[in-house]
Image (cartoon, rainbow, N blue to C red; front, side, top):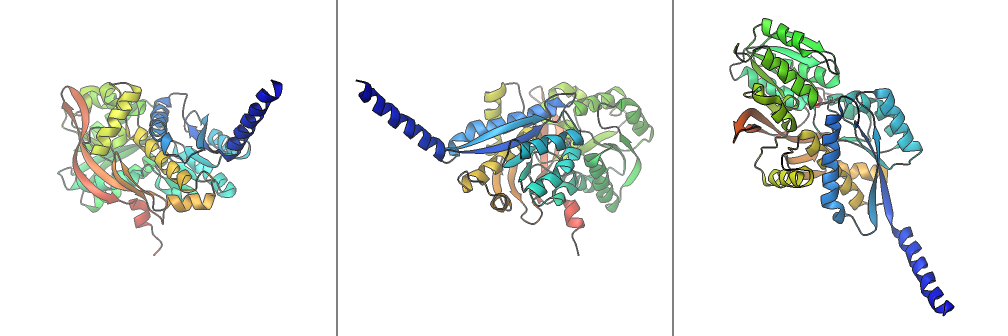
Length: 395
Ligand code: PHB
C-alpha cells in the first residue's frame, strides 16, 4: 500500500519541480504615486496597467509570468524615487522598471538604469529631455512639446492674438511654456505675460487674477492632471474669466477626462491639444473604454494616464513575449525601438532613434453631450514626433 501511494507522490513532486524550473517569472518594478495629495494620478496609472494585464495575461508564452513589484514614491520626490529604484534593482532584482508620473523622479532614476542596464519604460513623465538621459529609457506617454508646440501654432492661426501663459514651475510646465511660446510667437502671436506657480497644491486664485488683469484673448495653462487640474478650473470659473471673454487653452492635462465631471460647466469651451480623449470613436478606444468601465464601474472614465500605462504594459509584454521570458536588457531595448501599437489613442510607435513616442495630437474642445462633459476631438495632427528633439537635433 505504502509504496503504491509513495511512487505517484514522488512523480508528482518531480513533475512539479520540473515545471517550476521551466516557469519564467519576469520581475517588473513599478514606481507609482499611491499616497499623498497627488495619488489620484497614480490611481489612473495603476488601473490602466492592471487592465492590460487582465486582458492579456493569456498572451504570454506558456510558463512565463510577469510579477509586479510595486513601490510608492508619494509624489514628485526625487530622493524617494531614487532610493526605491536602487532597492528594486539591487535587492528585488527587477529586470525592468516602469511607472513614474513625475519628471524629477524619472531624472533621478535615469543614471541608475544606465549603470545597472535595466530597461525603464516610462508611463507618464513628459519633460522632453528625459529620454536623452539614458539609452535604457523608452517613453510610451507623451512630451509636453508634443501638445504645446502645435497648440501654439493653432492658437495664433485661429484668432487668439494675445495669450498669457501660466504653468507649474517644474520640467513639464517649463516645457509647456517654452513650446507654446516658441510656436505661438513664430506664427505672429503676442505673449501678454507669464507666471510660474508652485508645483503642488498652490492657491491658483492670485495667479489667475493676474492673468485676467492682463486682459489676453486666452490663458494657456499647464498644471499636473487629476486634482490639480480641477482646482485650477475652479479658479478659472470663480474669477469670471470666461465671462470676460478670455479662453482657457493648454495641453490636455488641464481637462483630463476622468476629472471632467468634477470640473463642471466652468470647463466648457476649453480648447486643448492632446494625444487622447475618452470620447474618441476609434474602435480601439470604444473597446478600451468599455473594458475600463466593466473593470472599474460604469461611471468611471479613463484619462490619458490610464491609457498611457495600458500601452506601456503592452510594450513590456511585447518585450517579454519576444524573448520568451528570458530578459536581456539590450534585446529588450531592440524590441522597444520601433515598437508599434494600435492604441486607444490611435496608432503609436517608439522612434528607434530617440526612444520617444510618436503619436497623433488632437485639438479638442470640452462640450456637453447628453448632459456629460467630454473632450470632443475636432482636428487631428498625424504622427507627431517630439518637436523639442526635432528642433535640437545635432546638425
Ligand atoms: C511630469 O512630471 O512630467 C508630469 C506630471 C503630470 C502631468 C504631466 C507631466 O500631467
